[in-house]
Image (tube, rainbow, N blue to C red; front, side, top):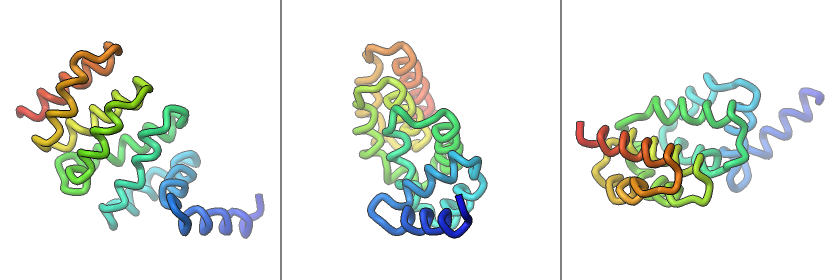
Length: 142
């Protein structure tokens, strides 16, 4: 792909609805974790634009791990705490990987508002989700 075509794609991704999510996805796919971290560190409200990645069970492992690194960087911070309700909805997703990731991030929020979303996951069909929910609830107690 020519550089100009790539730049046009990135501008289009970043400027439309869901554009930052698409842009973050592209960056993480290409190994641009440092760039995503820099953007979200400068504009913490953009952490919310990583939620579509969390909610995508088909996201590649590289993209998912990159998003996870950004969420972990914001553990206990306001930018993550304001996402508790949205993460709570993701904790009810049909895909176990999405539920597990959402439970992990709910624990990282360190918000007591995460408890009502995590408690039901203690009885989840997935052992991984149950374990992560229990660990996250324990983290909230610390």
